[in-house]
Image (cartoon, rainbow, N blue to C red; front, side):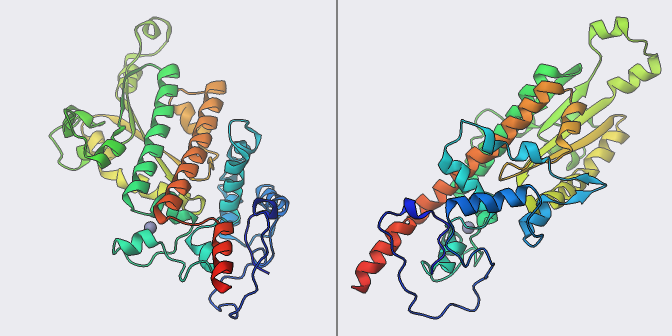
Length: 361
Ligand SMILES: [Zn+2]
C-alpha cells in the first residue's frame, strides 16, 4: 500500500502500483505515514494535535503543546482560525493540515513515496547550496532560492504593514512611528531615491555620537514617545514622569518561522538588539524592545496580545490584527508551496503514477 496523503477521490481511477523494490531502510516510518490517508483521517489527526489529545511524539506536537512560565506558548484559538474562516478554499485549509501532519507532497514526501531519488531540495542542489532536506520548514522560510525568498520577504512586510496600521489607529500618543518595509525592496535592490539613511528606523540623531553598528540595525517598527497636547492638560503627571515618558522608545521586531523554531528565533532577535539598546540608553533614552515571532502555518504566540497592548492596540482591534496576521501566514504559505511546485515542474501525485504505469507497460 502506498502512502499518498491525498484523498482517493482527488485521484480518479488511481490504483496504487505494487512496490517492486523493498522499502528503503532510511524512510522515516511514522505510524501515520504507513497507511493510505483519507482526508477525513487527516482532519481527525490534525484536530487531535490541535486539541492536545494525540500522543506527544512529533516535533510539531511538542511545540504546539509547549508551556513556558506556566503559560501555553501558542494561542490555540487564534492559531486555528483558518478552520473557521470562509475566505480560504478547502484546498488551502487541507494544505495547512497536510503541512502540520507532514503529508504534504514536497521533496521529502516524494522520496518516501518513491517519486524522487532523494529527499533533498533540488532548487538548492542546482544552485550548489548542498543537500538540504526539502520539508515544509525549508519551503516556508529556509530555502534561499530567489523566487521563494521574495515571497517570504513580502510575507514579512505585509505583517509589518498590518501591525503598523493597527498601531496608527490606536497609538497611545507616539510622536512618530517609523516603519521599515524595506526587506522586500532590499531584496529587489530597488534602492531608488530611498537611501540607507532615510530607510533607517533608528535615525542617527537618536544616538550620542554616531555608533556605527547600533544605529544601522533596523527594527521593523519604532515608536518615539511624547504626550499629546490634550493629554498634558488632563493627566496628573509630574515633570519627572513627563520627561521619563517622552524619553520612551518602543522597538518592535516581527518575524515568521516554523513553529518549532519560534522560541529560538525570539532569543536571536533579543540578542541582536542588545548593543542597540545599550547605545540608546547611554544617549539618554529609555528603550524597550518587543518581539513578535509568528508561525509560518498561522501559529500565534500567546504573548502577542500583551505586545500589541504595549503599542496601544487593544480589544477588538487587537483581535482583528491577530486574525489578519494568522491569515497572512496562511496566504503566503499557499503562494510559497505553489511557487515550489512551479519551480520544480513537479507532477501531481496522479500524473506521476499514471506516467509510471505507462513506462512499466
Ligand atoms: Zn532549497
